[in-house]
Image 1: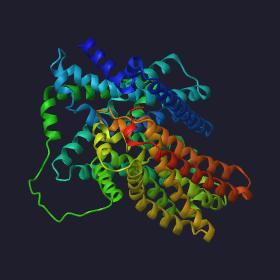
Image 2: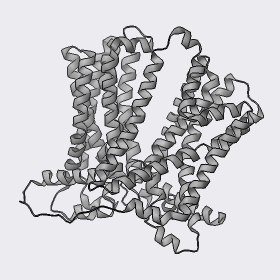
Image 3: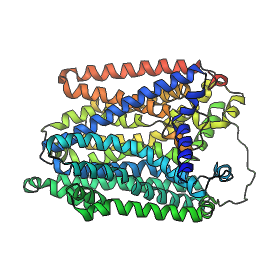
Length: 533
């Protein structure tokens, strides 16, 4: 069975990273795109390593190096749980391809384990970006032994098992519950948003409690954080105790995830088809009624079509709306905390003046993190020919996709601006910047998403998650959008105050020029040629 699992894993990972296509293709354009994507991933990896290293160094410099392993273990587990939540259920319980594979001389257990191991391998890469830089920083401040490194390696190898299993079960439950509803995608989206936003609000609540610590409590910050993390996620405590040589904690650290994983796979192997049938059964009603037909312009009809396609995918909706919801949560947090409490938390007097100047860029940055247009071409998949066959031009199709992003983001933008305006009480000029900047950035991210997706289209996907969350166009658009907001923030913080207006004006003019140039360039790309170059 081991050889079967290894072969299946190799095939799936080869398809996942596009290695098979790059090895066998003679198309130079595809190879260049693969190289460009690799460069983007390398830049993102360097950014992640730098952030984790800086975070770990900050804890160590505050005299809290002892909690670095525990903190990183918990953070890695939460990230794996969060990102696997959207994919685990669809990947493990996907029936597409299963019928073909089960007819081959491979066991059912091999298919299930290979699917699980592929997700495990991907999450191991994410975990390494978090754990290894933290380990290096920790080793510079604390004495370590050979046992410490052995426990660290073994604990890290078993780390993804528990969050992966939890995310698989939760994803399956949400899919099963939503499939019974008439509006399946809507119910699945609501359940997912409630779960994710609950986690986010909970983390804000914990952060708020930490901000109320007294000076005496600050002296015991490491113990307090250990208790909080241990109460939320006990394996993090086991990991810390195992590093110090405690045998019972070491056995729990490895044994609990292994047992849960084994039981999970055993149940899947025995009841896989029944579980899939229960999850993917759909409720439907034959109550169609012919009503009055309406006639709209091309752009309005395409806009309606794009909105229906968008809301038909719970993964698509959740992945984009979460970022928009983050802007609202940030605004509400600033409103209820107030400038005075923010100054207390950061320990910086008169931070309110700097905050008023940076907040518009920060909100814009959040709105640019994910754009619906960055995968709006690829999401068409093997049905893209239908749009190509319609009597519409490329401009109308691209504009309708841009309108969807603006339509979805606008309510979140409006709520964010209202709460920030009430919280910051800005002057008239500051209020204008607060209103205008996010709108300009929203237009920029919408047009940028189309440009990037036209350059890196992917119509040969098996799971929507691979397009919505893992595609080259989504990563490049996110990286570019965030960078366009972070650079002005850093310039405002570190440069003289007299240059603030110049930075704002220069940024908005540059963003508008780039948006206009990208928009014009997009119109020259005909629909019939997309994906064929």
